[in-house]
Amino acid sequence: MATIGDVFLKLIFVIAEIHASAVFVDRLFGIPLDRKPLYDPSKNFKCLDGSASISFDWVNDDYCDCQDGSDEPGTAACPNGFFHCVNLAAESKNIHSSWVNDGICDCCDGSDEWLGRVKCPNICEEIGRKMREELEKQQAIQREGNAIRNRLVKEAEQMKTEKKSKLEAALAEREAIQASYDQARNKNEEASKAENEARDAELQAWNEARKLKKEEERKAKASVAFKTLDVNQDGKITTDEMQLRKEFDVDEDGVVTVEEANMFLGNETEVEVDHFISHIWDAIEHTYKPEVEEESHDEEKPAAPVEESVAEMDAKLDYRDAEADDLDAKFKKRNINKRIRKFDFLPQEDLPDDENISYSNETQQLIDLAQVARSEFYEIERKVSQLDSDIRDIEDLLNQDFGPEDAFLPLNKQCFEIKDAEYTYKLCLFKDVYQISLNGDHRVHLGNWGRWLEKTGGKLKQIYENGMSCWNGPTRSATVIIQCGIENSLLSSSEPSICEYVLTFQSPAACDILPESLNPEHEL
Image 1 (cartoon, rainbow, N blue to C red):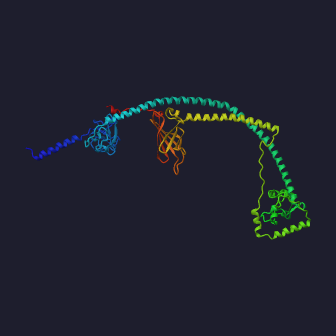
Image 2: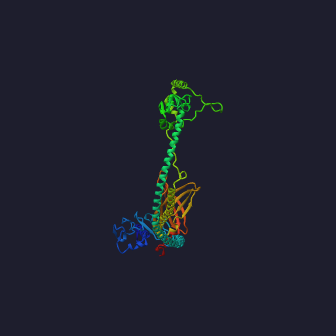
Image 3: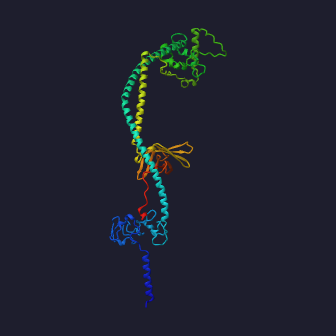
C-alpha cells in the first residue's frame, strides 16, 4: 500500500511533466522563412556568424550558445538575438529577443508570448486588411503616376532631341559667321584708329589755339591791371601803390598795411610788368577790382579824382607807412595768412566736344566711315554674343542630370510654393529655393541647385546649397525629398537644424518603381 510520501512524490513528477510540456518550444520557432534551410534538425547547427557548431538539440533551449544569438531565435536567452513574427495575413517583422515573453503583445499573431503569461489575440487579419487597402491605394497612385512619368520621359527625350538639333544649327551658324565677325572687327579697328588719329590731331591744334588765345587774354587783362595799379606810371608797382587799394585790406580794418600789400606782391616791395604778369596776376586776379569802390550814401557817380602832385602823393604814402608801424599785434602775419583768400590755381577748362569744334572735311569723312564700321561690327558682335549664349545654355541643359531617364527635365526651372504660419517656401527645381515672409517684404535665399544626393531604388533627394549666411552660423541649405505623387506640389517644409531646411516634394516623375506585393509568407 502506497504511503503518503509516495503519492506526493508521484504528484511532483506529474506536475513536472505537465510544466515541461507547457514550455516546449519548436526548434524552428522564431525563424524567418528564408533562413529555415539553415536550421536542419538532422545536422548539427552552425552559428550564423561561424563562431561555433552545436548540437541541434541546443537550438531554442533557452540558453545562449552562439555569440550572434542565432541559436535562440524563439527565446529571450540571447541579448543580441531577434525573434521573427510570421504575422500571417499581415506584415512579417523581426523584434528584439528581449521582447519575447515579456508580457506585451508585439506580434499581431501573438507568437512572441508563447509562454501564455498574457493572452494575445491574433489581429493580423484586421491589420492585413487595412494594410492591403493602403497598399492598393499606393499602387493606384504608383500606377497612375508611372503612366504620367512615362509621358514625361518621352517628353524629355523629345526635348533633348530638339535641343541637340538647335545646338548643331547654332554651332554651324557660329562657325559660318566667324569670318564675317573677324572681317568686321578688323575693319572697325582700322577705321577707329584712323578716326582717332585725325580727331586727336585737330583737337590738339584746337586746344593749342585756344590756349594761346586764353594766354593772350590773360596777359592783356594783367597789363590793364598793372597800368591801373602803377599809380605814378613809372613801370613798377610798389608797396605804397598797393596800399592805395582797399580790396587788399585783408583784415578789413580800413587800412592796407605794408604786410598786407607785400603779401599780394609775392612778398616783394616792388614788381615790374613782366614779373607781375607771369607771377603775381594769377594770385590776385580774383581779389583785384578794376575800379575801387568808393563809399557813398547816394547813387551819384563819384567825381573824377583830382590830379595830385608827386609831393602830395609821397606825403600820403609816408602817412600810411607810419600808420602801419602802429598796428596792433592782432594784425601780425599769422592772422593775415589765416584770412587771406588763396587763388593758387586756375579752373581747368573742359575739353571741347564734337558740338564745339568743326572738323575738316577729311576728318569728318573718317569719322563717318568709322561710325558705319562700328555699327556693322556691333550688329554682328551682338549676333555672335547671342549665339554663344544659346550654345552655352543648350550644352548646360544637355549635360544636366535630370534624374533617372531624365524624367524631371520637363520640370526644369518650374517653381512651386507652400505656406506655413510664417513663411512661403518657394522651390524652383534645378535652380534655387527661397523663404519669403508672408507679407512679401523679406526674401531669404536658402540655396542654389547643387546635386542629387540620392536617385536610385525609388529614393530621390536633392541638395540646394550656398544660400544666405546665417548670423553667427553656416550658409543656409535646403534638402528636397521627392516622393511619388500624381501631382507636382510641395507637401511640407521644416528646419530640423539651424539654417538647414527640408522640403518634401511629390511628383509623378518620381513614380519609377511600383510597390512590392506582400511577403511570400503572407500567402501561406
